[in-house]
Amino acid sequence: MPRPMMVVPEWIEAHCVIPDQESRGEPFILGSEQLQFVANHYTVSDAAKVGQKSTAFVYRRSLLVRSQKWGKSPLIGAFVCVEGVGPVLFDGWALGGEIYDCRDFGCGCGWFYEYEPGEPMGRPWATPLIQITATSEDQTDNTYDALRPMIELGPLAEVIPKTGEEFIRLPNDGRIDVVTSKATSRLGQRVTFVPQDETGLWVASNGGHNLAKKQRQGLAGMGGRAIETTNAWDPAEDSVAQRTFASTAKDLNRDFRQPPAHLNFNVKRERRKIFQFNYAGAPWVDIDAIEGQAFEMLEKDPADAERFFGNRIVPGQGRWLDSAKWDKKSEQRDVPAGTRVCLGFDGSDNDDYTGIRLETLDYYQFTPTYGDAERPTQWRPQDWGGRIPRAEVRSAVEELCKRYDVVRAYLDPKMWETEIDEWGSLFGEKTFIKWPTNQIGRMWPSLERFRTDVYNPDSAFRHDGDPELDDHTRNAVVRSRGLDAATGERRYILGKASEHQKFDYLMSATLAHEATCDAIAAGANTTPDDDYVYL
Image 1: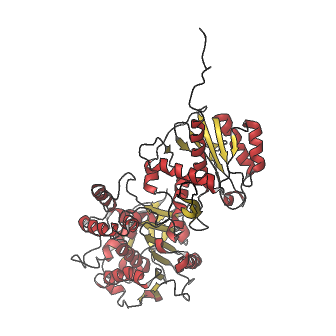
Image 2: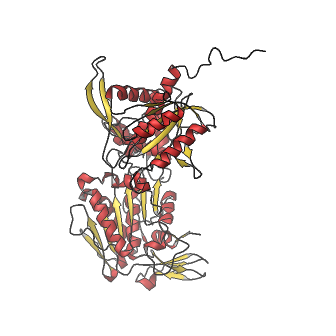
């Protein structure tokens, strides 16, 4: 069973000190959430072998998402200290009674740690190369300014006697550098540890994507690891943090503690509950001071205020759907076989995603599953060798029509004309209806109806909280297409904030809802007059 290398947090508390304020110079004691994050990052795989570096650990990289002023910078300073001269490499499994003694590694503080049986032991890097990284110098200063007094005011001053303005020389020719995206000559160096600060702001336009890629290449060559810290991000910007959080890689530790979705950030009483939740692991934070800053930001930058202090992924301007209102409509239900449903389908071939959503006649929408493996009816080309598996999609549609009573289906015909014709011949041409999503005159009113029913607190519409669809609702942005000739209203279509950010499942959801509303308007919920029995 994987076990954390507890010698690491113990070492941090024995060697690192608080860098500023009234408690300056006192021992840096990890808060409960900080301790959990450190322990998770240094959890060793049960298959680890002596000599392995990054592969000895369960996680290759870690992501920490917390509110502004939570204490991310001092924590990263502590990580830099222990990665520089502390026991962060796996050194075998303890029999019990083994000792990690600071004196064996040039530190005369007198601290030692006794291992328990079966506990993973640690040792320092021989020649660590650490890069404190951000996209701007001001951002790197946040960590570096916390790091230097953390060293200078405590036991580490003996081990690391010189903390320069631009870099810190470590024993055994080790080094701590400060790096931004402009330092192209340093990117790709053989680094052992990289703390990457505010990766929610690392985007393609400021070099953040390239910076992350180059540093990860350097880490791979040395068996090093990285930690990302950030506030919550704008989902429209396709940041490095967003990509890390959305990645399907199993060896990424994602620590993103989000407040309850039902709390409204714009209501002072509920906002305070959000702050109490967010800063529960940081008792040193004055919530009244946070409230003052957040309230001032709400006047001009409400989305930033909720991201920075509410620790929520909040879209900026141009987003089509309010994430908080969408989340409030989420609930879990069982939809039994035989239920009357409507179907929405948006398909692709080798680029965009293909998906099916179903909605009951009492307005509950969900992603069904199919096959023995109970796969969700969502297909990404990259999961199927670069192309949508048409045979899988056909099989799923046929299974759904047998399991449920599909009374109406709206399907985007682009690249799926033949299959839709086949389904029409099997299940009824009046049931399976082609619905081109590229026709503004038809699609725009459907989008408006769907959004209205999501926003209306009195509407019966609910959904299953499918995480893939949640992402797609956040990715969709408005693209204006002029005024409607009849009503004078502004028409629009949906677009991608970036090529990487898909919203295809949202189109399936919109079509499913439109099909449901039209089916009900046509009498799908009524009992026919001749539906009676003589006795």
